[in-house]
Length: 376
Length: 235
Image (tube, rainbow over all chains, first blue to last red; front, side, top):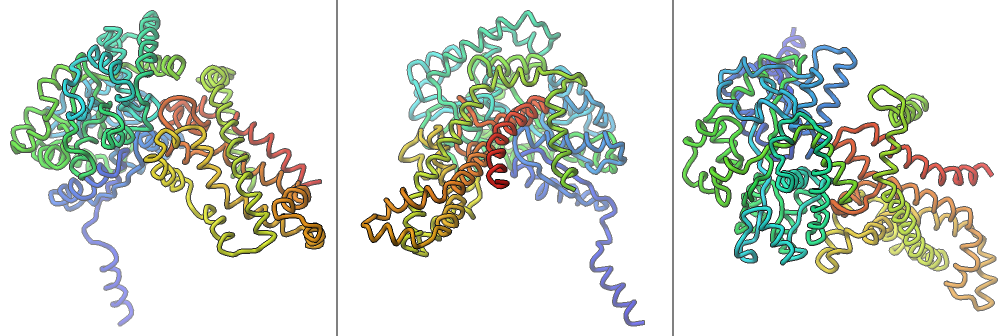
């Protein structure tokens, strides 16, 4: 009689009684984003839904992190295995659009209580794919220029002024080309929008091969511009070069700049700016795989993240990211100090005027190819 | 077993390199030739320079160690064996950047870092070969007044010729396939090592076909070296 009682006690200790549903969350982003889910969003959600336990896994950084999630889901789909073992994933715009195109995602947004807050052009279309109902941006991420005010007295307000500044200050502007991360890709796209004046056509399509000469001409001009620029070895490489004073201006992710400043790794004086006619945003989307085992709990978790109070507390105040859902509902909830930090250098008006979309996939590939062929 | 874990994935990537949208094609190799021919030459150049630099340091030091065994130096020489590639890339970049800012991202910087990492392997293989040389030859030469340098050049190196060739091939192949060090040290522009291109094609574009074609080119380069290695082994 004694042994079975002992076993029963041991089992009760080993197996948690509450964890009815285990939600597998794959994060295709840097460790700081993984930490938000593990330490802030996960516990916050668990407090409102005690029947759900989160298992958060990070898959790396940059585009390859999202590719890893795609590869896993695609392999399960191809193998005909059901259900799939990922319930929620955070993936890049490019990968999310590909997954929607291949029918790998669930159209879950209409089931959310906060569905009305999921707004903006980027939740309707991404890289020319209709993603309406499939994606919720966790936060918005803007590519911008950052400069050292003590070295740059009159920062350029437009690409025209930037080109003139780089000519006058060779070796003092840096970005990471197109192989070192998306901030460089975004800068390249912004350059092409400016040079060609084809923003609307490149982002809304339809694809027209006749636009290629104009694109190649713009990329050829970028090759000449690069002669006065430093090509860094990545998003972090640009920030690092700025911080060391090797360069005085560079193309960066605003969220990364804010994160580095918050961690004390960055000269607090370095200021972002958005030049006319603008640079792209590149959101990370929360998605639910089509055959997720716990779809209902997955939707509840994303709904929780999309709540204005949670967005204000975890996304804006804690990390200095732009809200992923309706900013009009979120921004009134943040403190004046956070608001000031959020809009230093880049005002809400700048964002409204100069925040740009990425081009549709065909143009994106055409521009990348032209860069590889011409700029190299 | 060998087929399942090695030949199958190898075959799958070779097949993928000849396919696009379900059709057989050479287009992926066309892309490699158009966009990455310079990177192939660059990769061969960096790997060759790195191998030469490794030998330039390892041969005299191992020769000296063969003649006058000295434990602490031998230990130091083998330390790079246990340092991960990423750590080597990061450490050398941080070490060089303040003094010679553009060196670490240049081809010479990458070749020097690769040589640093491969010194341990070279020491392990060369010391074994040098120690296999009969002492009688060395003593005879020394009695005739030969210095350590002379012993190394005229006796140890010629007698360890086959082992030197195998060491060179192994190091060259490893440098051809290096990824972490060029990733940590290189820049986002200019010529790249082949594995960086493979990562870019797949990671950024999801372009498995061109990535596979680049992989096949890398196999072929390494295979040339491997054939020499196998012939040495079976001789």
